[in-house]
Image (tube, rainbow, N blue to C red; front, top):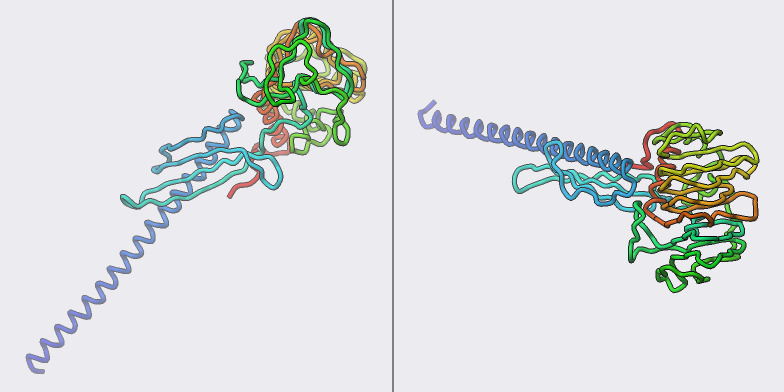
Length: 368
């Protein structure tokens, strides 16, 4: 072989080898880049999943939390958490969404989004006023009914939508000196009104008939509460809930779902209502009575068959739903202060308790 041919062969081999080397190097680089991208995607997805879990846990601890987290460091990347009220398949829900962010290399980044829908905290439709009842109402003395919206501490929230002072299917009588506050027919708050029929809804008709049990009342919040659900929640002790047939066995302050199941015709006298959550005084004969409510304040929703005299402050709303046509709820030295925040908080606790009672500690409807 001539020298020239040998040189040509050597150069050809070098070129071929170089080409093969470059192809191998490129493939290796592509494989490495693909591995990096896969890692970044998985890492961003893990961040999003973890962020949603953090948001749901925070929401369980504070049902009114809607601020979200603008940006937080998490698992080597960053997370953005948003929270908002929504509807999921016609059911009231809260959307918790997290965007997980991981950097490829500056300035490139990759984002993954995970969304969870949690059972919503809504006000039962049966809460038509700060005091809702199918009974005749007699308001006497210095008792105060305030349908303006308040925070959970009982502070008036100007500009926040309130409600009526009284809603009843029958009539409402009041004596001189009684005080009404609330939203009038004009949609505006009215303060310290002695006599103003626009703050009282008389002779009303509830679609399908006013619900007469705690579970049917709670079902009007958009979730299904089969009869006996709230009793089971109370017996489960979820969130500090209690179930008693003797009020003397209650532990204070009240929390979660407190269910006082009195014997037929019995009355809980000098009832201590200090605490929060959902307070139920009800029995199968629908004649359980809470009389002379004292202590307080109570923050949340009170549902009783019958109530006679309130001498404490209740922040939230009250419903009486028993079979007695006369109602002395609006008498005594106490006050009822309407609060959407307090009712929503109590409702959420009940819904979460119902979920836990079904064998799941989770309140998540769906996640994707």
